Length: 471
Ligand SMILES: Cc1ncc(COP(=O)(O)O)c(C=O)c1O
Image (cartoon, rainbow, N blue to C red; front, side, top):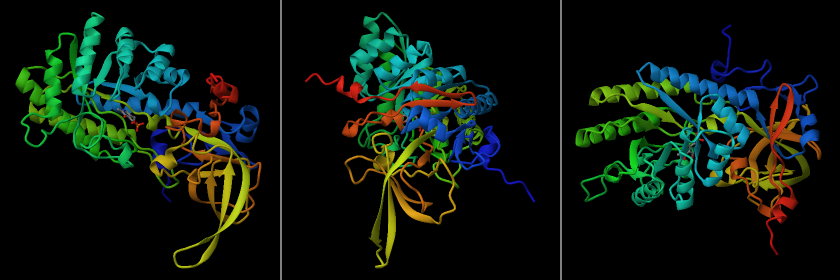
């Protein structure tokens, strides 16, 4: 019989006994059924660091970073160019994650002074940092330019003037990329699809009705007029949680076409095309993360062919993966509190029971279900049970009836207060989007490897929150 391996096993090193996607590569179960991360029992970790807690599989994060680095480096070497990779800090950033990414040859993509300051504090050199944002403040630009940030991605015509002004005042020539929208629409949800026209990011490559010039070309020409700006390249980010490379291919072709138009009109060679992030991951059993090798070779092929067809040299290509490095490497560990059964009447009139399982966190540590109707998978983490599964809903402790982490899931019918629940694939956009709703302190970020657990970001306390209160 042919061996059946998950495609994810082809590009990630996984622990023997791995539970498979969407769990981190080193998530297994001990003989007594308790989940273990890199050999550390989750029940012991819950005692050590408390719940809720974001746990990061350190070796999985590094393995994913290496897999992306190697796949993209090789694919673009094959078309005679180099690749620059930036870890998208918005997915989840702290000094340690920034250092780990930098050790695997990633720069850091930042979107605010906070993210920029964190990357700099981690020792990432300015030239390996990118600064994004549709509304960067003058102060953020001053900070970035003073720190020698190597890539400022300009997002609008007024911003070009502002960056030029700040760079001139600092006596610097600032490398910039122009963020364009290619019309390619990809990604899991309307709010995370960022390259179609009717949204706030970027400048369209298509002329508006009645105009002969596209906003993207107007922006490029404006950058070229500014003595304090250097046109480094073009940028496109088409969306997030994308599980097929077709959108990247189309965006790459649109960027190459714009680069060729710029060369034809101004004899200026575009040095770098940044195709953003957005590589999708598995959130539910049965789903498969995008294989970086397949994506890298598809995109490299499209870039190579388009440059060849339009007669321009192949520029350096940059990417900004976030979720695909940290998302699947992280889980959230919760303790079960109140359990309540309700009767639900289906559309056809049948009545069925549903178990509401409340955990000690919720929408404040993971707002993606409420924001994007994102779906997650969870399992009992402290034991296995042969009690018949029941239909359950995992809910948080916040004062919102929509505070639902998992709308519909089968859990063992004997689940009880004090059990632990692990939710898979919460590494990205969990901690980074966390809030203090209901004045609930944000959970810690804890790295786990075979030697034990290390707190990367400590648990917030009520005193931290109250410390801001000047009343
Ligand atoms: C400009 C840009 N780059 C990169 C990313 C990272 O995307 P992902 O985490 O899906 O890889 C985002 C996400 O919103 C983004 O807006």
